[in-house]
Image (cartoon, protein in one colour):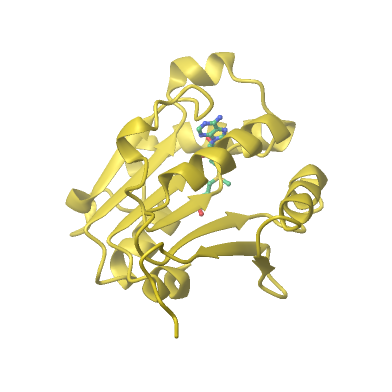
Length: 180
Ligand SMILES: C[S@@+](CC[C@H](N)C(=O)[O-])C[C@H]1O[C@@H](n2cnc3c(N)ncnc32)[C@H](O)[C@@H]1O
C-alpha cells in the first residue's frame, strides 16, 4: 500500500474499513506527500442493520471493541485522518468524486458491498493524474466471491495481483498524463 501510494504521489487516501486503524496509521506515517486521509467504517446503528458475511461480523465487533483505541488516535498523524461513519452502501460519496489519489477497498466482503465500494472507488479517482485502487483479500479462501469479482473485472480493467499476497491493484492514468 505504501509503495502504491508513493507511486501515485498521493495527497488523498480513502480507506473502506478502518478496523483497528493500523493500515491508516501505516499510510499516514510512511507517505510524506499525503495531506488528507479518510477512513470509513460502520457506526453502531448501521451495524445493527447491515447484512454481512459471518467472518465480517466478527471483524466489525472487534472494530467496535477497539474504537477508542485505534492505532492512530493520539499519534502525531491523527489530525490528517478523518473518520467517516456509515454503512458504505448508504454513504454519500459526492464530496469525494474525482478527489482521491488512492482508494483502498477493504470493508464489507459480501458481493453487494464489494461491488458498491468498487464502483464508488472508480468515481472517487482523480481524473487528471495517476491514481490507484487497491483491494485486499484477493485469493482469500474466506471470500471466493471477491476473487471471482476481480477476475471478472479484470476483463475490462488491468488489475494486478501482487504474488504471495492478498493484494490486487489498478492504476488509472490521468487524462492529462502523456507517458511518451
Ligand atoms: C478487514 S477490516 C479492515 C482492515 C483495515 N483496512 C486494515 O487494513 O487494517 C474490515 C472493516 O470493514 C468494516 N465494514 C464491514 N462492512 C462495512 C460496511 N458495509 N460499511 C462500512 N464498513 C464496513 C468492518 O467493520 C471492519 O472494521
